[in-house]
Image (cartoon, rainbow, N blue to C red; front, side):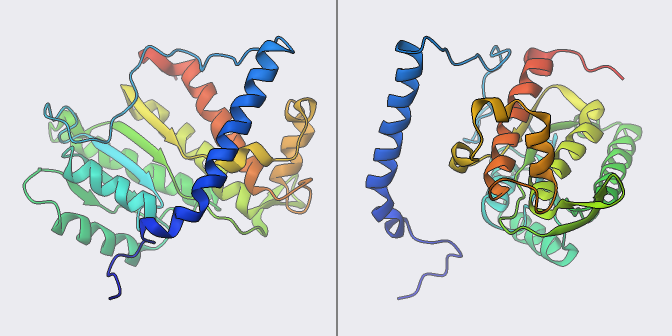
Length: 277
């Protein structure tokens, strides 16, 4: 009997179990080698006073009515994350997707499954992370929505509590955006990293103190092909962002960049540090 679920069944991933165990063992051995033999240490992830955001159902309903944004939330991990925030936490989740039709359908599916949590999924404006103009237009719509909520006296929904930068792609190509007016950016790197960077920067000042920013990375961040010296080079990252200039496939560097972005955000703003204009 065929399953109606849009996702692969758990048993289909069983063959990858031994590979995952071997990979985990190798990584731990490599870290131990660096720490004990070479004397290198893993740097702390900035301010770690804040507890991580839990997606598990909360009895306190501390997120009721607050705003979350999830990119790429019409399917997959993004859809399930948005659904959990609505159903389990009663949040107002803005679905940030390229396709209006797919986002509105996803919002309907989430709201139909919601029951009585008080949360809801909404769609404001298309978001195409491969277009900086689209990112700015989307951000402007979010700011306008929050301003209206504030004018209506809805304090909980007048700023952003959670931003999940989930959307991404795994195919490369030239972007319409240019560097120095003549070199096209890489479509994959722009969608996975640069678009999310701009979106986060645009929304930082309307985020609630203690808000959470989640950047989805991947185990592939280990395989970006650069040496330690290369990873600290501006030229390495510039080439990763330009179409046809990356030393290897730009997917892995884009995921490492997302991880480094998270660490830097936590260093600057973790622990409820005040954001200033």
